[in-house]
Image (cartoon, rainbow, N blue to C red):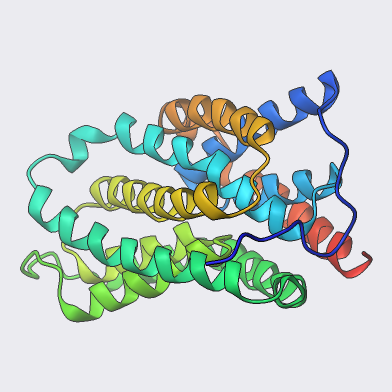
Length: 267
């Protein structure tokens, strides 16, 4: 696997100003909270990295590395909901891992111009998912069968592998897709589904991050700042979720996501 350069666009200067560092910390914290609630924090942090001058592929790899700890911190805050299902969770994580490796390799092997061309469409798709998320959740909840035997059938494993591949390649909105797949296929209560979603999102991002750290261009200082913020947001997200307006969160995500699309199209 070859190491990727920064791709299209100018390489940003070395170092960050104090203001830029604070912006990344704050963006990571908000994204960590959003990921714990509705699962679309990338739609906030990726545009911030673009605005700070990082080329799209570098912004993506740095963003993935930076948000991974936050996903695990959110899962850790919900660990009580994960007890008693270790074997099943391991099977689900294995499928997500396989997909994440494939997606990360795809990102690094395809020309940077391909990512630049398709990511506006991926962001637009993620924004549609964010807007429709309440209706999707309501429809899935209404059709769930609590009597279904717990397990991880081939259909769910294939869906998680596909979601993992998407997450390894870009990942905006993957949390919403993960929730839909898990809530549809498993009989668990919704808090446990959400905890499993956060854990699998961490696995997806963590596996892709290992690939990126080994062979791709990752801006470590920016990633570290995002990581610190996302851990705080992940830990607090579960506690403050009830106090937040999810409609307001979605509105913020949509506005920032549309900004990202404009940034990419006007480059």
